[in-house]
Image (cartoon, rainbow, N blue to C red; front, top):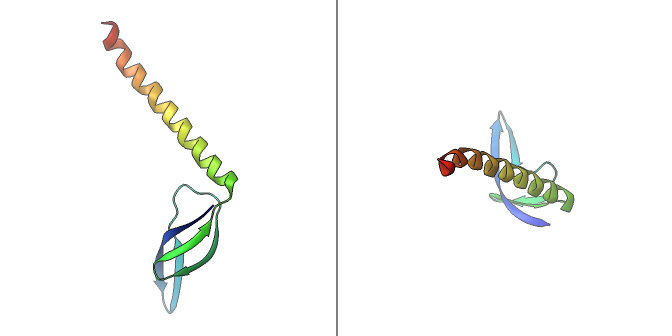
Amino acid sequence: MRQKVKVRQLKIGNMNYVFADVQGLEEFFVYGYEGDEAEIEVPAEAVLRKVLREVEDLKRRVAELEKAVMPRATA
């Protein structure tokens, strides 16, 4: 899956480093950048792992909310 993301630039001495600003992605390939955007491709497996992590986080939050609400509902 190809997408465009913002880039961050860091200048150290006379060197300029450019980083694709991606969060939550463990694996991606940069095809190039222009201005303040980079074109990246994310493998389908990496997208699937990210979605599965998000689903597990949501399940955990729902369980916590159920525990917090259940004592009030039975009172």
